[in-house]
Length: 472
Image (cartoon, rainbow, N blue to C red; front, side):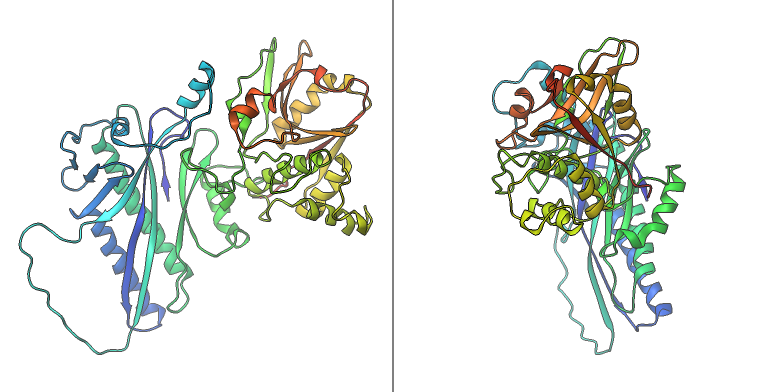
Protein backbone atom coordinates (compact mmCIF):
# COMPACT_ATOMS: atom_id res chain seq x y z
CA UNK A 1 0.00 0.00 0.00
CA UNK A 2 1.28 3.45 -0.94
CA UNK A 3 0.23 6.64 0.83
CA UNK A 4 0.80 9.83 -1.12
CA UNK A 5 1.90 12.51 1.30
CA UNK A 6 -0.50 15.21 0.18
CA UNK A 7 -3.99 15.97 -0.99
CA UNK A 8 -4.28 16.44 -4.79
CA UNK A 9 -6.10 19.71 -4.13
CA UNK A 10 -2.88 21.12 -2.64
CA UNK A 11 -0.50 23.17 -4.75
CA UNK A 12 2.18 21.26 -6.57
CA UNK A 13 2.23 18.47 -9.09
CA UNK A 14 0.96 14.91 -9.08
CA UNK A 15 3.43 12.57 -10.78
CA UNK A 16 1.74 9.42 -12.06
CA UNK A 17 3.54 6.49 -13.68
CA UNK A 18 1.70 3.69 -15.47
CA UNK A 19 2.70 0.76 -17.60
CA UNK A 20 2.96 -3.02 -17.66
CA UNK A 21 5.64 -5.15 -16.06
CA UNK A 22 5.75 -8.67 -17.44
CA UNK A 23 5.42 -11.44 -14.86
CA UNK A 24 6.74 -14.67 -16.39
CA UNK A 25 7.82 -17.84 -14.61
CA UNK A 26 7.92 -21.61 -14.98
CA UNK A 27 6.08 -23.48 -12.28
CA UNK A 28 7.35 -27.00 -11.52
CA UNK A 29 3.96 -28.22 -10.30
CA UNK A 30 0.57 -27.13 -9.02
CA UNK A 31 1.67 -27.66 -5.43
CA UNK A 32 1.32 -24.33 -3.61
CA UNK A 33 4.39 -25.07 -1.46
CA UNK A 34 6.48 -25.29 -4.63
CA UNK A 35 4.77 -22.55 -6.64
CA UNK A 36 4.81 -19.73 -4.11
CA UNK A 37 8.62 -19.49 -3.75
CA UNK A 38 9.02 -19.39 -7.55
CA UNK A 39 6.45 -16.60 -7.87
CA UNK A 40 8.07 -14.67 -5.02
CA UNK A 41 11.47 -14.91 -6.74
CA UNK A 42 9.89 -13.63 -9.95
CA UNK A 43 8.47 -10.61 -8.12
CA UNK A 44 11.91 -10.03 -6.56
CA UNK A 45 13.39 -10.03 -10.07
CA UNK A 46 10.83 -7.41 -11.10
CA UNK A 47 11.80 -5.25 -8.14
CA UNK A 48 15.43 -5.58 -9.24
CA UNK A 49 14.43 -4.43 -12.73
CA UNK A 50 12.83 -1.31 -11.28
CA UNK A 51 16.14 -0.59 -9.50
CA UNK A 52 18.26 -1.29 -12.59
CA UNK A 53 19.81 1.20 -14.99
CA UNK A 54 17.58 -0.18 -17.76
CA UNK A 55 14.50 1.21 -16.06
CA UNK A 56 13.12 4.21 -17.99
CA UNK A 57 10.38 6.77 -17.42
CA UNK A 58 8.95 8.61 -20.44
CA UNK A 59 6.92 11.77 -19.93
CA UNK A 60 3.66 11.39 -21.88
CA UNK A 61 2.98 13.80 -24.75
CA UNK A 62 6.59 14.96 -24.79
CA UNK A 63 10.08 13.95 -25.90
CA UNK A 64 11.33 13.79 -22.31
CA UNK A 65 12.88 10.49 -21.16
CA UNK A 66 14.33 9.93 -17.69
CA UNK A 67 16.66 7.20 -16.42
CA UNK A 68 16.00 7.42 -12.65
CA UNK A 69 18.74 4.91 -11.73
CA UNK A 70 21.49 6.57 -13.77
CA UNK A 71 21.87 9.58 -11.54
CA UNK A 72 18.50 10.79 -12.87
CA UNK A 73 19.87 11.20 -16.40
CA UNK A 74 17.38 12.73 -18.83
CA UNK A 75 16.92 13.96 -22.36
CA UNK A 76 16.72 16.70 -23.52
CA UNK A 77 20.05 17.44 -21.84
CA UNK A 78 18.83 20.76 -20.47
CA UNK A 79 16.78 18.75 -17.97
CA UNK A 80 18.90 18.04 -14.90
CA UNK A 81 18.24 16.19 -11.62
CA UNK A 82 17.64 19.60 -10.01
CA UNK A 83 14.98 20.64 -12.52
CA UNK A 84 11.71 21.31 -10.71
CA UNK A 85 8.88 18.89 -11.38
CA UNK A 86 6.48 21.69 -12.23
CA UNK A 87 8.89 22.79 -14.99
CA UNK A 88 8.24 19.53 -16.86
CA UNK A 89 5.02 21.14 -18.09
CA UNK A 90 7.14 23.20 -20.53
CA UNK A 91 7.87 20.10 -22.61
CA UNK A 92 4.37 18.62 -22.55
CA UNK A 93 1.99 19.21 -25.44
CA UNK A 94 -1.57 19.32 -24.14
CA UNK A 95 -4.86 19.11 -25.97
CA UNK A 96 -6.79 20.16 -22.87
CA UNK A 97 -10.27 21.31 -23.71
CA UNK A 98 -10.88 25.00 -23.10
CA UNK A 99 -14.20 26.65 -22.50
CA UNK A 100 -15.84 28.07 -25.61
CA UNK A 101 -16.27 31.82 -25.61
CA UNK A 102 -15.18 34.37 -23.07
CA UNK A 103 -14.63 33.40 -19.46
CA UNK A 104 -14.70 35.64 -16.44
CA UNK A 105 -11.49 36.15 -14.46
CA UNK A 106 -12.98 34.19 -11.58
CA UNK A 107 -13.64 31.19 -13.79
CA UNK A 108 -10.12 31.39 -15.18
CA UNK A 109 -8.76 31.34 -11.66
CA UNK A 110 -10.96 28.38 -10.81
CA UNK A 111 -9.67 26.46 -13.82
CA UNK A 112 -6.00 27.34 -13.25
CA UNK A 113 -6.25 26.13 -9.64
CA UNK A 114 -6.74 22.54 -10.83
CA UNK A 115 -3.81 20.37 -9.79
CA UNK A 116 -1.16 19.66 -12.41
CA UNK A 117 -0.80 16.00 -13.32
CA UNK A 118 2.33 14.76 -15.10
CA UNK A 119 1.81 11.32 -16.62
CA UNK A 120 4.76 9.00 -17.13
CA UNK A 121 5.06 5.72 -19.06
CA UNK A 122 6.98 2.87 -17.48
CA UNK A 123 9.46 1.24 -19.89
CA UNK A 124 12.55 -0.99 -19.91
CA UNK A 125 15.57 -0.72 -22.17
CA UNK A 126 15.82 -3.90 -24.24
CA UNK A 127 19.24 -3.35 -25.83
CA UNK A 128 22.39 -1.60 -24.70
CA UNK A 129 24.84 0.45 -26.79
CA UNK A 130 27.87 -1.26 -28.25
CA UNK A 131 28.44 -4.68 -29.83
CA UNK A 132 26.07 -7.38 -28.65
CA UNK A 133 27.03 -11.05 -28.15
CA UNK A 134 25.53 -13.57 -30.52
CA UNK A 135 22.34 -15.15 -29.21
CA UNK A 136 22.52 -18.66 -27.82
CA UNK A 137 19.55 -20.95 -28.25
CA UNK A 138 18.94 -23.81 -25.83
CA UNK A 139 16.21 -26.42 -26.02
CA UNK A 140 15.08 -28.18 -22.87
CA UNK A 141 12.31 -30.77 -22.82
CA UNK A 142 10.41 -30.85 -19.53
CA UNK A 143 6.90 -30.68 -18.21
CA UNK A 144 6.07 -27.40 -16.50
CA UNK A 145 3.44 -24.69 -16.23
CA UNK A 146 4.23 -21.31 -17.77
CA UNK A 147 2.71 -18.41 -15.87
CA UNK A 148 2.49 -15.11 -17.72
CA UNK A 149 0.73 -11.86 -16.86
CA UNK A 150 1.15 -8.15 -17.52
CA UNK A 151 1.08 -6.38 -14.15
CA UNK A 152 -0.72 -3.01 -14.56
CA UNK A 153 1.58 -0.75 -12.52
CA UNK A 154 -0.02 2.54 -11.48
CA UNK A 155 1.74 4.73 -8.91
CA UNK A 156 1.35 8.37 -7.90
CA UNK A 157 3.47 10.71 -5.80
CA UNK A 158 3.01 14.34 -4.88
CA UNK A 159 5.73 16.84 -5.76
CA UNK A 160 5.70 20.18 -4.00
CA UNK A 161 6.43 23.43 -5.82
CA UNK A 162 10.11 23.22 -4.78
CA UNK A 163 10.63 19.48 -5.37
CA UNK A 164 13.12 18.43 -8.02
CA UNK A 165 12.87 15.60 -10.52
CA UNK A 166 15.47 13.73 -8.47
CA UNK A 167 13.28 13.85 -5.34
CA UNK A 168 10.18 12.78 -7.29
CA UNK A 169 12.02 9.87 -8.92
CA UNK A 170 13.18 8.61 -5.53
CA UNK A 171 9.58 8.64 -4.28
CA UNK A 172 8.32 6.98 -7.46
CA UNK A 173 10.84 4.14 -7.18
CA UNK A 174 9.84 3.55 -3.57
CA UNK A 175 6.17 3.54 -4.55
CA UNK A 176 6.75 1.09 -7.42
CA UNK A 177 8.72 -1.28 -5.17
CA UNK A 178 5.96 -1.16 -2.56
CA UNK A 179 3.28 -1.75 -5.19
CA UNK A 180 5.10 -4.84 -6.43
CA UNK A 181 5.20 -6.12 -2.83
CA UNK A 182 1.45 -5.52 -2.52
CA UNK A 183 0.83 -7.27 -5.83
CA UNK A 184 2.91 -10.26 -4.74
CA UNK A 185 0.92 -10.58 -1.52
CA UNK A 186 -2.38 -10.31 -3.38
CA UNK A 187 -1.33 -12.78 -6.08
CA UNK A 188 -0.26 -15.47 -3.61
CA UNK A 189 -3.37 -14.95 -1.48
CA UNK A 190 -5.85 -15.38 -4.36
CA UNK A 191 -4.01 -17.88 -6.55
CA UNK A 192 -5.79 -21.14 -7.36
CA UNK A 193 -3.61 -23.86 -8.85
CA UNK A 194 -1.84 -22.24 -11.82
CA UNK A 195 -4.41 -19.48 -12.43
CA UNK A 196 -4.04 -16.09 -10.84
CA UNK A 197 -6.19 -13.00 -10.50
CA UNK A 198 -4.63 -9.94 -12.04
CA UNK A 199 -3.86 -7.26 -9.44
CA UNK A 200 -5.74 -4.00 -9.81
CA UNK A 201 -4.16 -0.88 -8.24
CA UNK A 202 -6.65 1.85 -7.33
CA UNK A 203 -6.16 5.29 -5.79
CA UNK A 204 -8.49 6.65 -3.11
CA UNK A 205 -8.62 10.23 -1.85
CA UNK A 206 -9.37 10.15 1.87
CA UNK A 207 -10.95 12.98 3.88
CA UNK A 208 -9.34 15.26 6.42
CA UNK A 209 -6.13 15.79 4.44
CA UNK A 210 -5.09 12.14 4.71
CA UNK A 211 -4.04 12.24 1.07
CA UNK A 212 -4.16 9.67 -1.70
CA UNK A 213 -3.89 6.01 -0.80
CA UNK A 214 -3.12 3.30 -3.36
CA UNK A 215 -4.66 -0.11 -2.70
CA UNK A 216 -4.24 -3.31 -4.74
CA UNK A 217 -7.40 -5.38 -5.25
CA UNK A 218 -7.81 -8.70 -7.12
CA UNK A 219 -9.51 -8.16 -10.47
CA UNK A 220 -12.88 -9.88 -10.78
CA UNK A 221 -13.54 -10.19 -7.05
CA UNK A 222 -16.69 -8.13 -6.26
CA UNK A 223 -16.63 -5.45 -3.57
CA UNK A 224 -18.93 -7.46 -1.31
CA UNK A 225 -16.24 -10.16 -1.00
CA UNK A 226 -13.57 -7.61 -0.02
CA UNK A 227 -15.35 -6.25 3.05
CA UNK A 228 -12.81 -7.64 5.53
CA UNK A 229 -9.98 -5.93 3.66
CA UNK A 230 -11.91 -2.66 3.64
CA UNK A 231 -12.52 -2.95 7.38
CA UNK A 232 -8.78 -3.22 7.96
CA UNK A 233 -8.23 -0.12 5.83
CA UNK A 234 -10.90 1.82 7.74
CA UNK A 235 -9.24 0.91 11.03
CA UNK A 236 -5.78 1.77 9.77
CA UNK A 237 -6.81 5.24 8.61
CA UNK A 238 -9.28 5.84 11.47
CA UNK A 239 -12.25 6.20 9.15
CA UNK A 240 -15.89 5.77 10.20
CA UNK A 241 -17.39 2.36 9.45
CA UNK A 242 -20.80 3.67 8.33
CA UNK A 243 -19.87 4.88 4.83
CA UNK A 244 -17.67 3.52 2.01
CA UNK A 245 -14.27 4.97 1.19
CA UNK A 246 -12.49 2.01 -0.42
CA UNK A 247 -15.01 0.55 -2.85
CA UNK A 248 -14.01 0.63 -6.51
CA UNK A 249 -16.56 3.35 -7.23
CA UNK A 250 -14.75 5.55 -4.66
CA UNK A 251 -11.53 5.47 -6.70
CA UNK A 252 -10.05 8.92 -7.28
CA UNK A 253 -10.72 10.42 -10.69
CA UNK A 254 -7.73 12.38 -11.91
CA UNK A 255 -8.67 15.86 -13.17
CA UNK A 256 -6.93 15.40 -16.54
CA UNK A 257 -8.98 12.32 -17.47
CA UNK A 258 -12.41 12.60 -19.14
CA UNK A 259 -15.33 10.52 -17.96
CA UNK A 260 -16.11 7.87 -20.54
CA UNK A 261 -19.90 8.10 -20.26
CA UNK A 262 -20.02 11.73 -21.39
CA UNK A 263 -21.99 13.11 -18.44
CA UNK A 264 -20.78 16.22 -16.63
CA UNK A 265 -19.75 15.73 -13.01
CA UNK A 266 -20.30 18.27 -10.25
CA UNK A 267 -20.82 21.37 -12.42
CA UNK A 268 -21.47 23.40 -9.26
CA UNK A 269 -17.77 23.33 -8.36
CA UNK A 270 -16.95 26.16 -10.79
CA UNK A 271 -19.52 28.48 -9.19
CA UNK A 272 -18.69 31.23 -6.74
CA UNK A 273 -20.50 30.97 -3.41
CA UNK A 274 -23.15 33.64 -2.86
CA UNK A 275 -22.78 36.37 -0.29
CA UNK A 276 -25.09 35.75 2.66
CA UNK A 277 -24.54 37.85 5.77
CA UNK A 278 -23.24 35.63 8.60
CA UNK A 279 -24.09 32.66 6.41
CA UNK A 280 -22.50 29.25 5.88
CA UNK A 281 -22.53 27.07 2.79
CA UNK A 282 -23.79 23.47 3.04
CA UNK A 283 -23.21 21.37 -0.08
CA UNK A 284 -23.75 17.91 -1.52
CA UNK A 285 -20.90 15.62 -0.51
CA UNK A 286 -19.18 13.57 -3.20
CA UNK A 287 -19.69 13.13 -6.93
CA UNK A 288 -22.83 13.04 -9.06
CA UNK A 289 -23.64 13.18 -12.78
CA UNK A 290 -25.80 15.91 -14.29
CA UNK A 291 -28.86 14.32 -15.91
CA UNK A 292 -31.26 16.51 -17.89
CA UNK A 293 -33.77 16.57 -20.75
CA UNK A 294 -32.90 15.02 -24.13
CA UNK A 295 -29.96 12.91 -22.98
CA UNK A 296 -29.48 9.21 -23.86
CA UNK A 297 -31.38 9.71 -27.17
CA UNK A 298 -34.51 10.14 -25.10
CA UNK A 299 -36.97 12.94 -25.91
CA UNK A 300 -38.48 13.64 -22.51
CA UNK A 301 -38.79 17.40 -22.95
CA UNK A 302 -41.83 18.58 -21.01
CA UNK A 303 -42.43 15.50 -18.86
CA UNK A 304 -39.19 13.86 -17.70
CA UNK A 305 -37.73 16.40 -15.25
CA UNK A 306 -38.42 14.28 -12.14
CA UNK A 307 -36.98 11.22 -13.90
CA UNK A 308 -33.79 13.18 -14.60
CA UNK A 309 -33.55 14.45 -11.03
CA UNK A 310 -33.96 10.86 -9.84
CA UNK A 311 -31.17 9.77 -12.22
CA UNK A 312 -28.87 12.41 -10.76
CA UNK A 313 -29.61 11.07 -7.28
CA UNK A 314 -29.01 7.47 -8.42
CA UNK A 315 -25.69 8.52 -9.96
CA UNK A 316 -24.64 9.91 -6.57
CA UNK A 317 -25.27 6.59 -4.81
CA UNK A 318 -23.47 4.74 -7.61
CA UNK A 319 -20.41 6.99 -7.60
CA UNK A 320 -20.11 6.97 -3.82
CA UNK A 321 -19.94 3.17 -3.96
CA UNK A 322 -23.23 2.41 -2.22
CA UNK A 323 -24.65 0.54 -5.22
CA UNK A 324 -23.15 -1.12 -8.28
CA UNK A 325 -26.12 -1.10 -10.66
CA UNK A 326 -26.18 1.54 -13.41
CA UNK A 327 -28.40 4.62 -13.38
CA UNK A 328 -31.93 3.45 -14.32
CA UNK A 329 -33.61 4.45 -17.56
CA UNK A 330 -37.06 6.01 -17.74
CA UNK A 331 -38.61 2.63 -18.52
CA UNK A 332 -36.78 0.95 -15.65
CA UNK A 333 -38.06 3.66 -13.31
CA UNK A 334 -41.58 3.15 -14.59
CA UNK A 335 -41.29 -0.63 -14.31
CA UNK A 336 -40.15 -0.32 -10.68
CA UNK A 337 -43.31 1.65 -9.88
CA UNK A 338 -45.41 -1.03 -11.58
CA UNK A 339 -43.60 -3.80 -9.70
CA UNK A 340 -44.45 -2.30 -6.30
CA UNK A 341 -48.09 -1.80 -7.30
CA UNK A 342 -47.91 1.99 -7.46
CA UNK A 343 -48.80 2.16 -11.16
CA UNK A 344 -50.70 0.12 -13.74
CA UNK A 345 -48.76 -1.84 -16.39
CA UNK A 346 -49.80 0.73 -19.04
CA UNK A 347 -47.57 3.24 -17.23
CA UNK A 348 -44.42 1.62 -18.71
CA UNK A 349 -43.45 3.45 -21.91
CA UNK A 350 -45.81 6.36 -21.22
CA UNK A 351 -44.97 10.07 -20.86
CA UNK A 352 -46.62 10.49 -17.49
CA UNK A 353 -45.00 12.63 -14.84
CA UNK A 354 -43.76 11.38 -11.51
CA UNK A 355 -43.23 13.29 -8.27
CA UNK A 356 -41.27 13.18 -5.04
CA UNK A 357 -43.27 10.28 -3.60
CA UNK A 358 -42.56 8.16 -6.68
CA UNK A 359 -38.87 9.09 -6.46
CA UNK A 360 -38.88 7.87 -2.86
CA UNK A 361 -40.51 4.58 -3.90
CA UNK A 362 -38.07 3.94 -6.78
CA UNK A 363 -34.99 4.64 -4.63
CA UNK A 364 -36.22 2.07 -2.14
CA UNK A 365 -37.21 -0.47 -4.80
CA UNK A 366 -34.12 -0.27 -7.03
CA UNK A 367 -31.35 0.81 -4.64
CA UNK A 368 -32.63 -0.13 -1.20
CA UNK A 369 -32.28 3.53 -0.20
CA UNK A 370 -34.76 5.09 2.23
CA UNK A 371 -35.78 8.75 2.03
CA UNK A 372 -37.50 11.36 4.15
CA UNK A 373 -40.25 13.49 2.66
CA UNK A 374 -40.56 17.18 3.54
CA UNK A 375 -43.96 18.73 2.79
CA UNK A 376 -44.17 22.48 2.15
CA UNK A 377 -47.66 23.88 1.68
CA UNK A 378 -46.53 26.84 -0.42
CA UNK A 379 -43.32 28.01 -2.05
CA UNK A 380 -43.11 31.09 0.13
CA UNK A 381 -42.42 28.78 3.10
CA UNK A 382 -39.31 27.21 1.54
CA UNK A 383 -37.20 30.14 2.72
CA UNK A 384 -37.85 29.04 6.29
CA UNK A 385 -36.46 25.53 5.74
CA UNK A 386 -32.81 26.56 5.96
CA UNK A 387 -32.05 24.68 9.19
CA UNK A 388 -33.52 21.39 7.97
CA UNK A 389 -31.81 21.61 4.59
CA UNK A 390 -28.46 22.63 6.07
CA UNK A 391 -28.63 19.72 8.49
CA UNK A 392 -29.39 17.32 5.63
CA UNK A 393 -26.34 18.35 3.61
CA UNK A 394 -24.20 18.33 6.74
CA UNK A 395 -25.19 14.82 7.84
CA UNK A 396 -26.39 12.99 4.70
CA UNK A 397 -24.86 15.01 1.88
CA UNK A 398 -27.13 13.58 -0.83
CA UNK A 399 -28.85 15.54 -3.63
CA UNK A 400 -32.48 16.46 -2.90
CA UNK A 401 -35.30 16.13 -5.39
CA UNK A 402 -37.95 18.83 -5.08
CA UNK A 403 -41.26 18.69 -6.95
CA UNK A 404 -43.94 21.34 -7.12
CA UNK A 405 -46.83 21.65 -9.55
CA UNK A 406 -45.46 20.33 -12.87
CA UNK A 407 -41.79 21.13 -12.25
CA UNK A 408 -39.00 19.17 -10.57
CA UNK A 409 -35.51 20.34 -9.63
CA UNK A 410 -32.48 19.05 -7.76
CA UNK A 411 -31.17 20.94 -4.74
CA UNK A 412 -27.41 20.55 -4.28
CA UNK A 413 -26.91 22.84 -1.30
CA UNK A 414 -27.90 25.95 0.59
CA UNK A 415 -26.18 29.08 1.78
CA UNK A 416 -27.96 29.94 5.00
CA UNK A 417 -27.58 32.34 7.91
CA UNK A 418 -28.76 31.08 11.27
CA UNK A 419 -28.91 34.63 12.64
CA UNK A 420 -30.76 36.39 9.81
CA UNK A 421 -32.54 33.46 8.18
CA UNK A 422 -31.34 34.62 4.77
CA UNK A 423 -31.03 31.70 2.36
CA UNK A 424 -30.02 30.85 -1.20
CA UNK A 425 -30.50 27.51 -2.91
CA UNK A 426 -28.01 25.74 -5.18
CA UNK A 427 -30.21 24.37 -7.99
CA UNK A 428 -29.39 21.82 -10.67
CA UNK A 429 -32.08 22.21 -13.32
CA UNK A 430 -33.09 19.05 -15.25
CA UNK A 431 -35.03 21.12 -17.82
CA UNK A 432 -31.86 21.95 -19.77
CA UNK A 433 -32.00 20.58 -23.34
CA UNK A 434 -28.54 21.42 -24.72
CA UNK A 435 -25.20 19.64 -24.89
CA UNK A 436 -22.70 19.01 -22.10
CA UNK A 437 -21.25 22.53 -22.20
CA UNK A 438 -20.17 23.54 -18.71
CA UNK A 439 -19.88 27.23 -19.59
CA UNK A 440 -23.42 27.43 -21.00
CA UNK A 441 -24.86 25.44 -18.09
CA UNK A 442 -23.30 27.68 -15.45
CA UNK A 443 -23.52 31.02 -17.27
CA UNK A 444 -27.19 30.52 -18.15
CA UNK A 445 -28.12 29.39 -14.64
CA UNK A 446 -29.00 25.77 -15.36
CA UNK A 447 -26.72 25.08 -12.42
CA UNK A 448 -26.66 28.09 -10.12
CA UNK A 449 -27.59 29.80 -6.88
CA UNK A 450 -31.20 30.96 -6.60
CA UNK A 451 -33.06 33.06 -4.06
CA UNK A 452 -36.38 32.16 -2.39
CA UNK A 453 -38.19 33.98 -5.19
CA UNK A 454 -37.15 31.15 -7.56
CA UNK A 455 -39.98 29.03 -6.22
CA UNK A 456 -43.64 29.48 -7.12
CA UNK A 457 -44.79 31.28 -4.00
CA UNK A 458 -48.28 29.76 -4.02
CA UNK A 459 -47.57 26.18 -5.17
CA UNK A 460 -47.07 23.29 -2.76
CA UNK A 461 -43.76 21.39 -2.80
CA UNK A 462 -42.63 17.94 -1.73
CA UNK A 463 -38.95 17.33 -1.12
CA UNK A 464 -37.38 13.87 -1.25
CA UNK A 465 -34.32 13.71 1.03
CA UNK A 466 -32.43 10.42 0.40
CA UNK A 467 -30.63 8.93 3.39
CA UNK A 468 -27.16 7.35 3.32
CA UNK A 469 -27.05 3.61 3.99
CA UNK A 470 -24.92 2.72 7.01
CA UNK A 471 -22.28 0.53 5.40
CA UNK A 472 -18.63 0.51 4.42
